[in-house]
Image 1 (cartoon, helix red, strand yellow):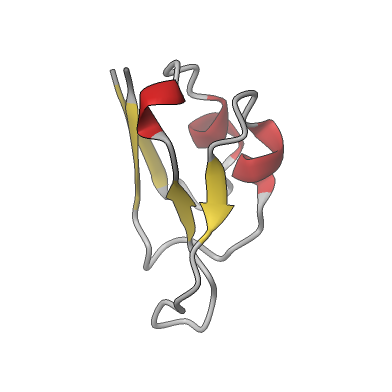
Image 2: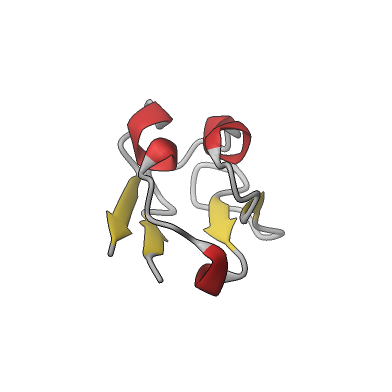
Length: 67
C-alpha cells in the first residue's frame, strides 16, 4: 500500500493527477485552499500501487508518493 501526500497550498486543482491515476483514487477536495482552488486528495489509499504517475504529471510539484 502506498500513500500520496498533496501539499494543498501548492495545488491549483488542474486535475492532471486525477486523469493520470490508473486506480482512479484521486478526487478534488470539497474545501478551498488559500488560493481559492479545490486541492486534490486521495481516497481508498489501500488501492494505491505507488506508481507515482500523479506526482510526475503535477505541474506544481504538489504531490509526494510514499511506498
